[in-house]
Image 1 (tube, helix red, strand yellow):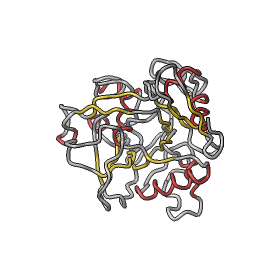
Image 2: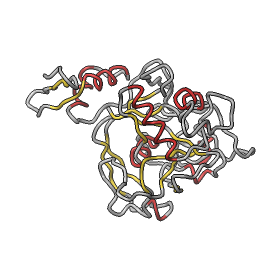
Image 3: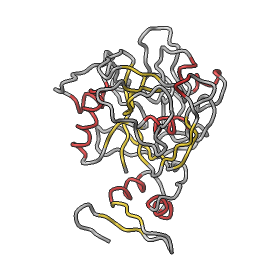
Image 4: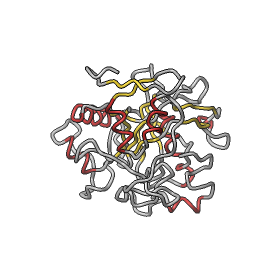
Length: 297
């Protein structure tokens, strides 16, 4: 046990190898509703249980999912468990192939909602990006955000909280969006279910809904389909040949075009599939493009 710089606590589990978790990480797991034994298992790199029941939010099965904030104006976060999944689709576009297994080795926290206009304004007032959102409703997702703007936001949020905030990697995003499913959407394969979890095909160009207006997925995350597109960290690759299998982002080429996921309120249902990918230059400022944050635990 080392309780000096970094406040590292070494967790020993019987005859297994010891693993390290910081006290801050253990605190985040506890805030998210995990029991002591589950926290020890996660610190040892073992698969975690699904997100725990609590008082905030609701998953697709109607159970509550607890969440936490690092400050009053910070995005609300949900701990997503470690696990593995099959990424991509054999029935989709060519850039969604080949389907391949990705292992998410440790739990990480994900924004329960897309970053809102209110959260953006509280942190970015006076920032270079200004206020790119046209809506006066503070609970609507911020939009018209460049990839570089999103990077500025997570840098400032990290500095404010002393925590490691970032964008999700593309594989983390799909893992979080699927929430244990292999269907086209987190709600199933039929487009008929999409209206319960997503704002899509909006009749008024540019229409968005306040975050959380639709049912969450099994991880307690809202609007993973629809509302606004969500920037992720990765450079775009034309297919998944040689793609990372450990949940990390594709990098190494700078500048590069960047990936966004989830589909916006104006897209057709097929563009809201969990496997669907889209791409643009990082300087693009589209009126229905936003992001959500991740936090390394």
